[in-house]
Amino acid sequence: MALLEVRDLTVVFQRKGEEPFRAVDGVSFDVEPGQTVGLVGESGCGKSVTSLAIMGLLPKRGAKISGTVKYDGTDLLKLSDKEMRDRRGRDLGMVFQDPLSSLNPVVPIGLQVTEVLERHRGLSRKEAMIEAKNLLDKVGIPDPNRRLKEYPHQLSGGMRQRALIAIALACRPKLLIADEPTTALDVTIQAQILSVMKELVQDLGTALVMITHDLGVVAGLCDEVNVLYGGKVVEKAMRHKLFAEPRHPYTHGLLASIPRLDAAPGEKLTPIKGSVADNIPWEHGCAFAPRCPNALDVCVQVTPPEEDQLGRLLRCHNPVVPGTPAAEEVPV
Amino acid sequence: MVLGLSSKKEKIDGVAESAGVSLAASAWKRLRRSPVFLTGAVIIGLFIVVSVLSPWLAPHNPSEPMLIDQVVKARNEIPPAQPGHPLGGDLQGRDFLSRLLVGSQQTLIVGVGATLIGLAGGLFLGTLAGALGGWVDSVVMRLVDVMLSLPSLLLAFSIAAMFAKPSQFTVILAVAIVQIPVFARLLRGSMLAQRHSDHVLAATALGVKKGAIVFRHMLPNSLSPVIVQSTLVLATAIIEAAALSFLGLGNPDDRIPEWGQMLGDVQNVFDTHPHLAAYPAICIIIVALGFTLMGETLREALDPKNRR
Ligand SMILES: Nc1ncnc2c1ncn2[C@@H]1O[C@H](COP(=O)(O)OP(=O)(O)O)[C@@H](O)[C@H]1O
Ligand code: SF4
Ligand SMILES: [Mg+2]
Image (cartoon, rainbow over all chains, first blue to last red; front, side):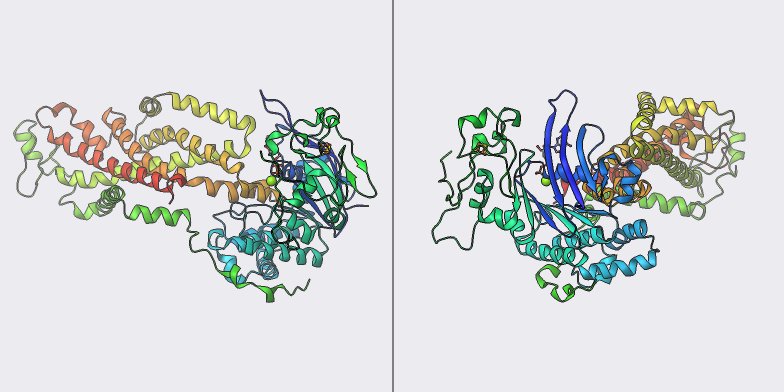
């Protein structure tokens, strides 16, 4: 049985006087123990909302959640507030995008680490401090004894994110959700943070849900990848398969728009034309149609169904034929 | 769980940002160079020093009617300035300068006392509303709205008048209660903003208990506007306390002088001896101005929008 089983997860935001908005639309995926699963897509496609729904962190009012999120067989969406609070930080950990704003500015780092240890592992402040020092050491923060006494603004961006990873993993949760953990960091630091995460989750056997808009992150880390578009999974495959042979035009476009080391000299990057703002609703066809180079007439009439194609899930009327080079950039 | 990561501590990441200066530090840097803030600080510094040292600074005992002979002999004449009594005496023949100096002490006590009690009440209500939300929030905020809809002096006057025996404490209490809604509303607002902040979300994602979320993660980060407001309220409290005394709702025992009360006591002789009212009035204005200057500059300095 999978550690995390997300089935048909749907989140509808409903504000007074506004049209209901489906941020997440029937998303399903599994995470096996120790596995790393990627959720990839442009900004606004529903990645963060998916993660917050799993963690039970969406506002009670205004967000309607349906589907199931089974962790070790228990549906997290059915748990009471209290039961969920006991599980957060202990069974499920989370790392957020902006390390500075995710730390409490007026509390020293040490206390922010010991807080979880005291809460979930019942350690005394003293024991927790020793454990906190070990944790900071493990995530590669130099001089942990000094850092424990410092405040978030005294640490560099990379160190803050290391501290947050230490905090999230302090109680050795079986599942860690990382929502764009490197997006707010310098490029040089990004690789370091990713390698810290990779080593830690391997070492602890933690399953990881890696949320990112950056396929480069996925390439180095994930076993399985879910590509999201407009709140739906449009392609799901094992990482090597997805990279070797992207079938969905959106995935294909994403891959064509990242720089590659093996590209022929002079080869141009091809960004996907348009933006998420061009989306049409899924009820009337394919949300990606206005931006899709493969679009057919049927794409704006019939919602493409999800099809299983030899271990790959695909939601497209006219998938990319394997081996097709990236489409020429169309002047907008 | 043995990891070889410690050996991989990259240098590049080890350098702490020197640019990441805390809000408090950068605010202080700006305040130190602000002439307005410094003016306020000097006034308040002097005020506090004078009130603490006033028993020793005052040339005479402020409650001893040492010039009463002159008052009696001249039939209610107010003793004029004379050697040993540079400002003369008051209606009861007590040394006016000594009363003025010692009066600062009571004014400070009333101002600080009323502010602290108002702050405590406001913190309680604001935390309740901001932390619990829902119907508690609605009830508290309606109460606050009602209190704020009344003119503050009128409200203080009504509260003070409810006490059968006015005393210094009833003055403090009346002024304090009027300040509660101001603090409560301010705190509740910044608590709400904290509730939607990233670090509160992150703490919630760690399963941190509700109490700790409120008292460790929300409240300490919501306090700075409240602290700024306290400085401004000190000024209001002193003025309102003086107004209550002036209107006859102050401490009837005038052995220990207080500026507002001194002002009230001389209403009948104001046209013939304006100096008896002018001195305490000017003192009150200067001190209130000092607190206001400090509070306003503090508010500007702590406003993240003004950060450089
Ligand atoms: N609390 C909310 N209320 C209403 N709409 C929201 C809320 N949170 C997110 N959304 C909307 O849901 C969509 C998906 O957001 P999000 O999951 O944050 O995207 P991303 O993939 O960039 O993480 C966005 O269009 C966003 O505007
Ligand atoms: S369904 Fe049509 S529009 Fe959508 S991705 Fe496939 S080809 Fe493009
Ligand atoms: Mg996001």
